[in-house]
Every structure is written in C-alpha cells, then in structure tokens.
Length: 250
Length: 308
Ligand SMILES: Cc1cc2nc3c(=O)[nH]c(=O)nc-3n(C[C@H](O)[C@H](O)[C@H](O)COP(=O)(O)OP(=O)(O)OC[C@H]3O[C@@H](n4cnc5c(N)ncnc54)[C@H](O)[C@@H]3O)c2cc1C
Image (cartoon, rainbow over all chains, first blue to last red):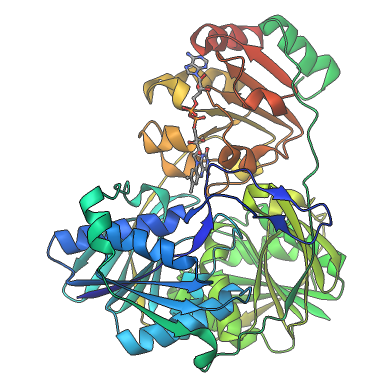
C-alpha cells in the first residue's frame, strides 16, 4: 500500500507572528519555519503504518518555493521514502493546492492520502476536503485513530460533540488531529540517510492547473489588544470585582 | 443576492450557531434560505423557521443525511447552489468537514472562519492563531464561507418562514457511519455558554476537574480545557478550547492552571472578561487577564466555590 503525505512549510508554532507596518501581510523575514505540526502528525502516522507492515511506500509532497525542500528532507529523515517538490513562488489558496495535489494523486495512485487538518498560518482547514472532492474520494477528517483492513479505513474523528467513527473505501483521504499520535524526532543517522533519498522537482506551471485565485488579500492588521494584566489579592476581591465592576456574575 | 445557510443541528435540536449565521447573512443582504439536512429533523426545521429574516427553510430529510456525512451533504448543497450568491455554514466540525468539498466542486475558494462582513464581497478573518486579522475580497461567483458564530449576535426569533421539503437524496456511497461516542452533559455547550471555566495541565489529573464542577454549577458555566489537559487524558477532546479546538467568546472565561500559550489564547481571547488563576505570576495568561489571581488552584478553587 502506498501513502501520499502532503506537507506544508509554515511558521514554527512557537513563534508569535507580527504584522508588517504597511499592513500588506505578516512579516516572515528571518522567522523560524518548520513542517506544519498537523502535517508532521500525518508523516508520523504514515511511518507507523509502514512499520506495522500495512504500508510499503511513503511519498511526501510539498508545494511552494525552493525552501520547501527543507521540510521534504525533514519528512524523509523521519522515515518517508521519497519526495516530490512542486515548485512555485506564487501565493496559492487551498483550491489551487488541492488541484496540484490532484495531479500527484492521479500520477502516483496512492491508496491513502494523509494530510494535516489545518495549517497554523492560514488556519484554513480546507485542503484535504477539497482534494477528496476533486478526486471523488471519501474523507475522514480530524482523525484521532486510523485503522486499515480489507480495503477499508476506519477513521475515528474528533467532532464538537465527542468522537465519531466512519468507514471509507480505499483510496481515501484522512486529515489528522492532535491526538492521532505523537511525532518522533529524526535521528542523526536518519538525517544523513535522508540526504540520499530522491526528491523529484516539478514546476507548478508545467502542470495543467489554473493557479490564479479569485480571493484578494486587501490587508492584514494586528488584532485588537486586550488591556489585561490586573491582579487581585484574593478570592474575596475577585468575586467583588466580578459582581460590581465587571458585572458578569450576579 | 440570495444566501443559503446550512443549519447546525443534531436532528433533534437547532444549535445556537444558526441564528448567528442568519444575523451575519443579514449584514451581507439578500434573501436568506436555511437548509436543514438530516433525518427525522422536523423539529429542527420548525426552529429554523422561527428565526427572523429567514425566507424559506428547505428540509432534506433522508437516511443518507442522518450523520451529515461530508460526501453526501456536499452533493446536496452543490445541487442547490445554483442561484445563490453566498453559501454559509458555521465553522463547527460539521461545517469545516463538508464546506471545502462544496467549494472545490463549485471550483471556487472557501473563505474560512469569517468574523466580520465588510460588504457583500469583502470579509474579515483571523489567521495565525488570531495574531493577525486578514481582510479578503472574493470575486468568485458564489462565495462559500464558514462563519465563526461567536463573532456575531443572534438574529431574533418569533417568525414563521415557509418550510419546503426537498426530495433529493444523495448517497455518494464513499463513506459509512460506524459509531459515535458523544459526551453527555447537563451543562451548556461550550460554544453557547455565557460563562466558561477551563482547566489546564495544572489540574494534574481528571479527578481534580471535579473541583470545577461546583463553581460551574453555581455560575451555570460550561467546562473547558487546554490541549495539554486533553492530551494527558484528563478530559475528552470536545472540551479543548483553542486555535485548533473550539473558539469561544463568553461573558466570563476563567482559566485555571493554564499557562496561556498562543494556541489557547486564540480560542478564548475574545471573551468579555477573563479571569486567570495560576501559581506562576509570570504565566503569559496574566497579560490578557482582566483579573489575575496568583496562587495554588487547589486552595483557590474551594474558596471560590464557597464565595459564590
Ligand atoms: C499545532 C498545535 C495546536 C495547538 N492547539 C491548541 C489548542 O487548540 N488549545 C490549547 O489549549 N493548546 C493548543 N496547543 C498547545 C499549546 O501550545 C500549549 O502546549 C497548551 O495550551 C498548554 O496547556 P496548559 O496551559 O494547560 O499547560 P502548561 O503550559 O503546562 O501550563 C500549566 C500551567 O498551570 C500552572 N499550574 C500548575 N500547577 C498549578 C497549581 N497547583 N495552581 C495553579 N496553577 C498551577 C502552571 O504555572 C502553568 O502556567 C497547540 C499546540 C500545537 C503545536
């Protein structure tokens, strides 16, 4: 069984992003970048499926500028077998990403595609579902458990009311939630080995995909700041303030 | 212009999000239809018809919609999409699940999690865990959007819109419901509560969450949690508040033993009043708290319960 894992290069989750003074976008100059955490969980799940003998090959794909190769190498060091880099400098929306991924799915015909449920930069939570629609596959989003048997995948999903399990016919799309697994760290020997694993580069504009989005970013501003930082001495003062000052309790 | 709103419900009850989406839609302008897709969901349709500003309630009542599987529901919405300028669903796990499918099948972008309507084509949404706010303009023929319900007031009730039954049944056959483990609670839902008290890793274990119960009872509060508390197995996943959990904006949010990581703040910093209880006076949560109380939660919680 072949698994395709798309990964996104995104701001590291420990970094608090700043908005540019001209409000044109956020400022990513000299900011630490990593694999989006949910994509890392996707890579880990694929590796575990390979370790348990369910999967035979893991292909990672990343779309974006040359720097994305760094994140592909990280995934290869973690245990993926080979990489595909779809190169483009364009700022793409989830729909264009999903269309580019569809070209990879068409060519690679994976049995399972595992993606992160959302990227922590755009916070869109769209790509997996869009790819599922474009490839006419079933989807198991926000997965906290994945079990494969007899050409089916049972996906336990984290939903607002609790957990829901659905069964999908393979090939299918899974998107990861936080509880699916705890990603490992890459070992030094594996980082060295990853340097010899193959990465194929494809120019995005060589693929027959319209890369223009109809959504224009007009501005990016800083959020309203809360004026916090006030301390109270004890419970009595807290309760009194909540009653008489904030008036949020009776 | 006309707007289709996907109703948030569990087949028996219309959820609070829907009236908020109607309010958001009224800011866009145009006729507003509400779609109820489910099974044995007549009561939901009645409740939706009572929301002021709704022109029609369309009801697709069929077995294939019982669990609102994304593959089936998106096919239904796509079939209905013609003629609508905007399609809205709440940014809940239901809306987030099927709406991108609708967008892709209509070959348009999705605008996720909008918090304000600037005009019929321009919307505001948080990015980077709410550390930046983007204003975006869409020229797509139909605007497919999910809405952060906590950012909008609810439309009034006391109306009676026409209810029309739909006969389309789309069973894509791509997915099947197996089972659900739903949390049963007498407390208000996190996203609908006026008061929330949340526990973090500082609670130490699941049993200690009982310390929050008495306070929640007295305040009519919902109980939430940080990711660390969920990951550690103290409480179930549906209690997670944050960037990648539930986004809440109650009148009062009490954070207990929570440090205030940006991912947690993203889910609660629009609360009207924030209280933080933490033994570390340097904890970042205090920077955004209206009232911070430094101390051991195991001393403070019983005292607070007694004082209320
Ligand atoms: C991709 C990604 C998504 C994430 N999404 C979310 C999300 O949606 N929601 C979320 O919450 N987090 C999320 N996180 C995790 C987040 O980064 C933090 O790790 C998490 O919020 C920490 O939880 P905490 O504050 O409970 O734990 P900690 O950071 O460990 O803080 C515990 C606090 O308890 C205090 N404490 C300990 N004992 C006591 C005591 N006896 N009395 C009083 N105070 C005490 C400590 O001083 C400390 O401040 C996400 C992280 C990633 C990478």
